[in-house]
Image (cartoon, rainbow, N blue to C red; front, top):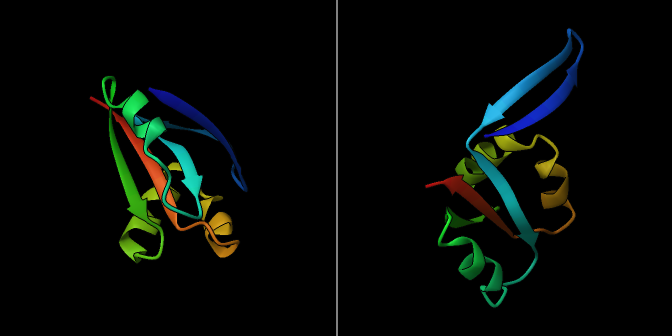
Length: 81
C-alpha cells in the first residue's frame, strides 16, 4: 500500500492506494521500466489524452494534470499483483 498525505482546506488527510504512478513520459520509451516492474506489479501504460485515463490517474496524484498540460503523453501506472 502507498500512502499519500494531502493538505486540503479541511486539514491533512491520507489517501491509501494499491497503485502508483511509476513513470511519465512524452514519447514511447523502450519498455525497460515496464520489464523491470512486470514480475512484481501489474503495469499499464496509459494515453494521457484520453479523459478516462486522466481521471483515473488524477485520483492517484492530483498534480498529474499539470504534467499533461506540459506535454506528457504517456503515464505508466503500477498496481499490486
